[in-house]
Length: 388
Image (cartoon, rainbow, N blue to C red; front, side, top):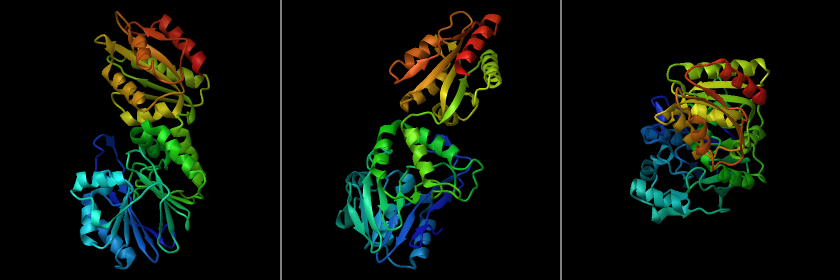
């Protein structure tokens, strides 16, 4: 793939993977992106997962015409991007490897060498001239590992953004939902805890002219018909913990179906009342991280669950803790609790969120004792009045 005259894509697509990082379902596969800048000197940016090392090295040789790369820039040390480092360095023993100091420490830990005899340590604002292309390096600690750097090419106005702006899905599979859906699930699943650090990098990038964003997962941006500002503004919204959509996400767990009935009734009534968006998910049966994504996407959240062993249903507890780990804030939350003899879910849920920022609780809590009744349906109507 030609990105600009001198910048070429040499990444690979993984269609064998079932779970990314051992937990994220990736039905569309996964892309491991790498790039080559051909100039008076040649730079290769990042590598790929080791199973694809041969394909990647062949891609490099093809686009360089057999020339030996002068620099190998390692922006991020997660093994899906770094586990072909040894193969590359063995093939190109004259190439200088460039990375942050912390990346070299990790390199030694992962692969047994930090290439002290031919390395270049990169720091904030460091520059590297390839000829027409002058690269500037931007430190991006905890986006989402501490050693991360990003690279800006002033000549072609390209930001190589490491894992920032990435998404799930192989690049040779059309994603019917475009960039945002799987990018959102990727962001809130993997990067979401580090909103402040993402904000810091966005501030650094604010003064740069950017025409393309080349991340380590997903397509080169912008996609046809879109403007680069769309992606930057979206990342700003996500990392500032602002809601992306007006609407209500209802996350529920159910044992015998009664809590589900209440959640579905609430959804119907919200839609009938004109709520702009209503999404609903059974936390035990639907993709867990799509539910995390939806909780961050909407400005209102309803948690519907049973009291279970004196606590809340385990899937709901897992879900809430996943939100808390990612800094969930600036939202309005309603509760539907169900308990046949001693409903306690509302109290437990509020206790879990007690240290969260800017959480506003609905005035009306729906309390079900076993099954819906006239009294609990009236409470649902009152919650609709608040949330619609």
